[in-house]
Amino acid sequence: MTVLIEEFKREHSEIVAILKEVEELGILSKEGQAKLMSIKASLLEHLWNENERLYPVLWKEAEHNKDLKELLDLFAIEMEDVSKVVEQFFDKYHGGVMDEDFPEEFERLFTAISKRITNEEDILYGAYEELNLQ
Image 1 (cartoon, rainbow, N blue to C red):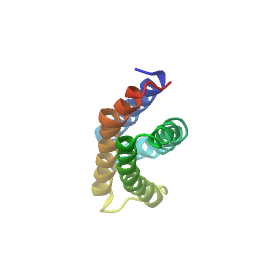
Image 2 (cartoon, rainbow, N blue to C red; image 1 turned 90 degrees about the vertical axis):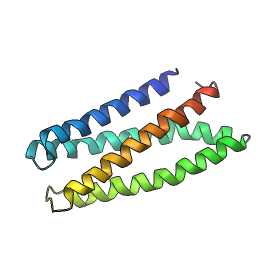
Image 3 (cartoon, rainbow, N blue to C red; image 1 turned 120 degrees about the vertical axis):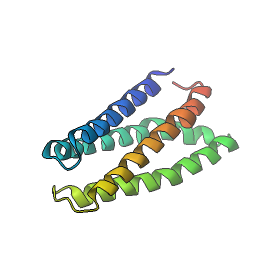
Image 4 (cartoon, rainbow, N blue to C red; image 1 turned 180 degrees about the horizontal axis):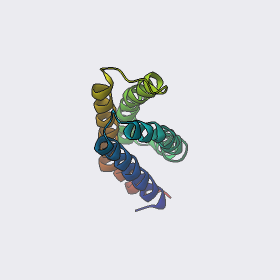
């Protein structure tokens, strides 16, 4: 496994661990909410790293690989959806004011992030590794 993929998987584990900790602390507790708001920076940094270090390499390879291009096109659509969920959640709740939709929206956030992580690790990272890129 490349160093880059190991780094991204470690970041994924940390993100999921924080989300689980939020659930354990209680999403409506002050501690849970503080922990949740602290993850925003980690999420944004992780996404930035992928956008700068992983995707450009894959898109370059996709210029000559139809299957990879189709895969990346699907991931781009999914990423738009995940980004919207994350952005809307943190925009709405950044001030710490929770409403009756908060638990449901947190669950939507957790599900979207978890699904994205699973898809990246199960599909995209494997494609990257198969290309033998460093």
